[in-house]
Image (cartoon, rainbow, N blue to C red; front, top):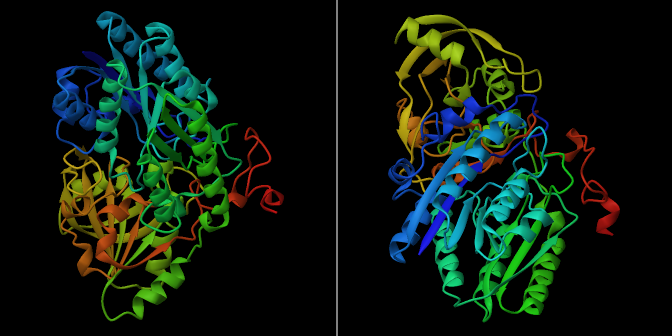
Length: 496
């Protein structure tokens, strides 16, 4: 049995003015400038907490010949340049054509990628693959929990399997599930009947977290449904709201074994349950001033301020300074801000050396939506090459890099700056600059939710930040022109 695999992963924030280039994918994919497949993908992802890690695991367990053709990804940002997308899709299709015939295809996609030409880039990608392999070859797609799933995606894929967790700590499991189910379809042990439902609902990242209610209870409903006779898999996709496209928002899929009526019944039940929770899925935000006051009143314990408005994992620049400015103005003691994307300051610190004092201009260099640059005298405390391995539950075992990093000290605040833009996911990404969050009072993270997988257990209290930015969890800050309407909560009459 031969299964081809591959895909492109990008979460596109259409409110960002920073385009995503081919060079971004070449830098972030970890497979070389030519996006090497085969053994390069196998060596990079084997035994890692990733989708392709799960593909490889499932193929090994089921004695399947997996043919990994392409794994391309870039940090979330603005629309993908069309030439970059066309180049990567062309590579995948060229490689797929050379290995045909295959028994099945598994696509590792995100589900919220937009290019200069396509609002539904994944729908276009899946369709191109379907046209090459024909209607009879099984095609299973894995998507992020933030996918903006479209009718076209559902129509072209035999089965779509989305992540069950946010933070995304189940990627390996979902990849394994996809390969195991694909093998069952190929052996004609099951006949997938997939039902899709799109809700008129947008939700913001903080309350999509599956470590908090109401998502805990919602996912328990999903798991119970998947355990019912005749149900192969069920997916809740909470959507990516920072994309002004027609199909942004929440959707659900249920796949039954040869019973379309059962799939329709269950997808309706799941959609109705989410609609009942619509008001509980809207976040409450806290200012940095209130977070500092709270932290100052605690005798011990870490407070985390989740600056999701500047979350690079959702396309923000990761160099916002609003929280930093407030902490410096208040002469806050025991604070850490990081990791800020500031290659100029990182290079300046490396040139000066440990112990030197520099006149730094920190952050605020990408746009004017996340705070102005902070001009200050700072001491260089730590330098690092930025190399790390994810040791937390999310993407466990996968290597990564920030590029040259530095810790700058201004008063009682440590500022971590990096050359590359990365979301702070686990404590190892701070350990490499000799910071143990458990010994600090207030940690400002450039993340909305993913930090909770590994850093969250270290905190006594976590606040969702009330800060400005293109990833701010506040619908009043965004003008939607392409989104289908009516949609809740933009059109509150839908809730009555």
